[in-house]
Image 1 (spheres, rainbow, N blue to C red):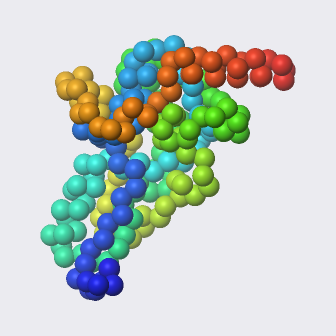
Image 2 (cartoon, rainbow, N blue to C red):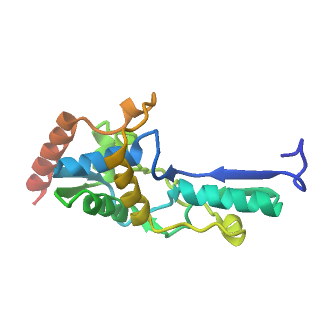
Length: 195
């Protein structure tokens, strides 16, 4: 921003964006996995705060602040405490008919099993502070984050009408059924031995 001057430049730093027409495939993968039903490996703490923002909210906000002549730099995420990872997965469960059963597995155990955060288990992030980004300046300028369940439901409705656009990163998203089954079986064995 130094080259342009903060008095005439707007720099928006969006975090994770979800919603209809997402082409990376994180939320679509979670929805399709829930649609299949059965036991679904859920990573970590269901109460972990997350901050994805609906792309439609970012679009509305961007048009508004550009129109108002707002300048400076600001993060554009859902507010801290807006939603949890458990709420995200339960919203995916509900949107797809509720046939999936969430099996919560600890972060530490998953990390020892060669599971890749963020991609193999979409939106599962274990790095401290990853979901602790202040968007206070954007909120003060009018950024509004709709309920995450609405984003999930609208994304599911879109997936019922249209195919996901191909994107090079989609192949890395999600666990294979074989790896998920093997992980759940290993988790069951380990927890049974501990009891």
